[in-house]
Length: 127
Image 1 (spheres, one colour):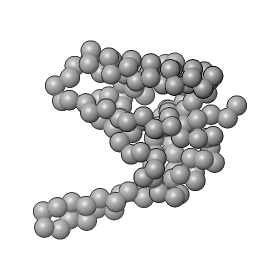
Image 2 (cartoon, rainbow, N blue to C red):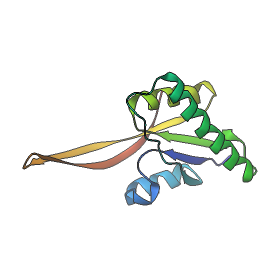
Image 3 (tube, rainbow, N blue to C red):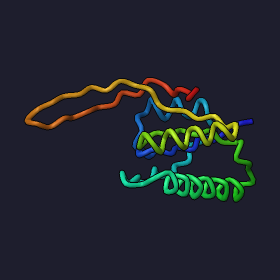
């Protein structure tokens, strides 16, 4: 079964490098972007759970509209550490595959500013 990649990060796929897009399309049928939410530092577990449950319902609805089951998707999840940890664990508990992207950062500091460039290397599964 060909799967879609649900991109749940702060980086929409239309801004990915050519290498990252090509690698994704070799592994998945297509990429579907879901914007990673703004996670407030004051939030407790309840807000994280609600945000995740809302995301999951949106994904299920979108997949149902296309006549697909949730299992026909893998997930790329990166963002706020607490919420990413929670989301990855919940998706894995459901038996779904969850990935991160791995790469190298080139960091340059000038005039009290830090400029970071990400070089995509590969997708890696959370285990």
